[in-house]
Length: 597
Image (tube, rainbow, N blue to C red; front, side, top):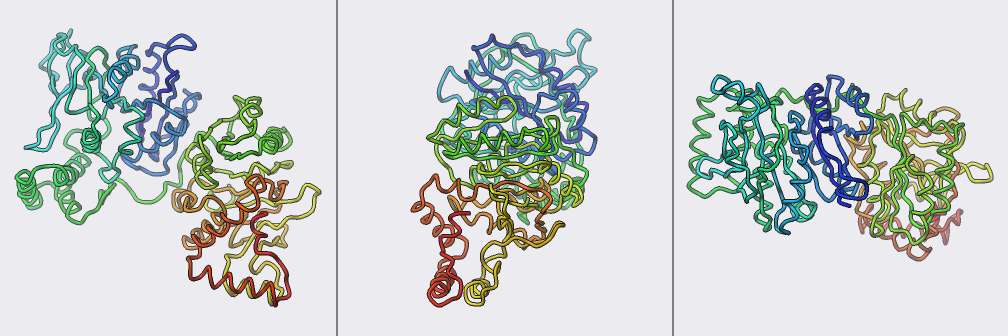
């Protein structure tokens, strides 16, 4: 069965988005076991109008992704595409939130066209002006309203750098009821094959808004994909609801991005004409047009200098869930089962309405899928075709998470009573601006080292030669209150989405090891605090995960991780001190100790 993701982006457009989602009910559903499996994703671009709570209340079955800030058309859709790819979508149907479904057969028809030829990569339907949103309302008879065409395929005008919509402003008399190749697609509604994304990547985020679809079309055609138009199916579009015709937003992005696109793809003669026009606009154009020209020459991409898009993170963001728990399994099905059982024990604080669990199987050889099946549908289950390593695996669960806070748990962890709500409570006190780690204990109830200082030559000397515990290896903070530390074990680490917006995902430069140290160093540079929370307790079957990959391989990965983190020169110096410390020092801790963490 084909998997289809419908993706829309919302930016303080609550009413339009709710109306669009309601219109999705018009889509006809294939009988069980036939047709396609549908996923609907709303990407919220940092709205401030209560969109997330309203959408979540009206459509609790829909996945709502919070980007944390306005990433524009391209950035917002890219987040949705990433989420859908992890889900395993075969087709991605991008639809603007100011559209309304007209034809119940929309999905079937677009897929039918896409599958008619392996070279067809993108398909758009016929698009009408939504009733009352026509450019020239006085031109049409009452019975023509709802039949006025906005897009019926088209071509690209390379002399003037702009798309030309066929049938624009015409009343539909079935003159474009056909299926044929087109030079362009409509960004308002387009079906994209998975193969296209695998070949050319996502939308270019330097455009932010306008011309990202034209750029995507060019890249697709360069790689040999065809664009098609299907006039047998249609939808309505509330044209320019998001930006407004002739608005400051339109002036700025259309001016700047037309130059970006034209200077990348147009012929020399057209490029010279664009430069002349740019000079004219800079001297005599409207303020936003002048700014657009200036930012083009300054090479300022993305949101640019338009004041309508404030920089930074919106502290009043809404999320559909409070907590997402991410777990990556590699040949630890028995431990993963114990972890899931502990999560769902009532006394441990899991709340089905505000929390979610994501389990990624990293191409295990064990019976993980069979064991995990017993926890469906309480969890979101993902599977890799090959073992991608620690960071890539957990990054996938982060990208696939919907919660305000993300809790990374190793598969060899067990949640203890009240551990989850306690971490959430403390994170709320820090207003989502700190990274937290719980207290790790051994299965026998004894304390386990949970924190560390960033590794340095002086720290290694203190640990090995001066016997100052915790200077280089991990230690247990002596505190019954949240204690600020330099680093925390990633076996149990809570990272708020607000922090992820600033610090980014885990470093994928290593297969396993040193990702916790690298992230701690990055947080320190950004002045984002890490706190050890002793009142949130978790059992950790120390080293159980790494044992499954074998001691020899683990040490190889450790050495590669160390070189990646320290660099070859510092790594060599540090290794020398550690070896001398083992020979002459007062502490005989093996270098391979990190492998067992």
